[in-house]
Length: 123
Image (cartoon, rainbow, N blue to C red; front, side, top):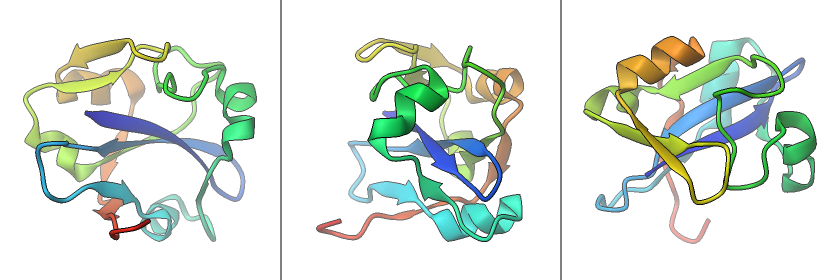
């Protein structure tokens, strides 16, 4: 399972891909500081849920970097390259697309970077 998250830097909305492999002991979360270093922003924070639909056109659980209101910059964590297939939202909660990572990176023009960290227990 993977998540596409909407983040906001100093000047723009960003779409971020993070792996959430439920079979793994280590769950990952977005490292906003690492993403900010890559984007040149002072900081990057997740967009509050109350703003997600207005900004992306998608409801929570349906956020995808494909076919959005506009082409936002997309950053994929480097772990995307460990999978033969990734599962991303199809734009509607509960509907997924299975796609090869190389195809996802190509169609979204994503930049592959280290932007995930292990999630702390209790966070």
